[in-house]
Length: 167
Image (tube, rainbow, N blue to C red; front, side, top):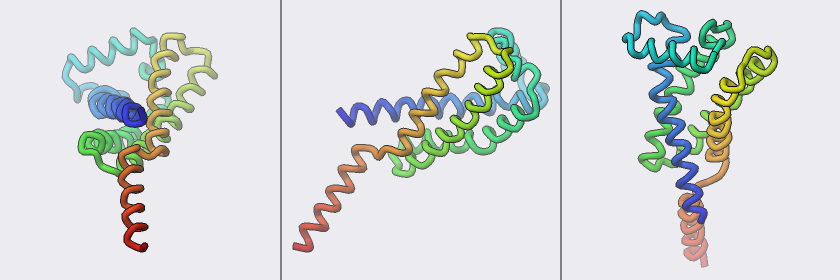
């Protein structure tokens, strides 16, 4: 049962990491870089997104939002690339990268939700767009704080081997 839960958590972490790995350079970066750098189809998707969700922060980004996007491009994107590799290659350090990504996302989302709910400008559709990312963030933090069952088994077998040798 624990192995199934661990694999489900890893699948959620991998999905989040894949979304950020693709979306950050192709779409999020359009908030801070000139749109003339992007092909027309990507700009059209970006414009559709702004209109569909009435995303006023993306349409007219305030300085704090631009800063969050720059931080996401500089920190979150490479961490998510590493996370995706770490999960697929079953690296132990993926707990650390998951924790970093999760804490970043919780910080990012607290600023976004604070602005959206505090300003009264956000639509319910826009707020609901960010709820899955809140679930992702909590899952990332839990993945970072809770050891994988495979690692616990490996550590306990090494510990028991060490105890047997002493006897």
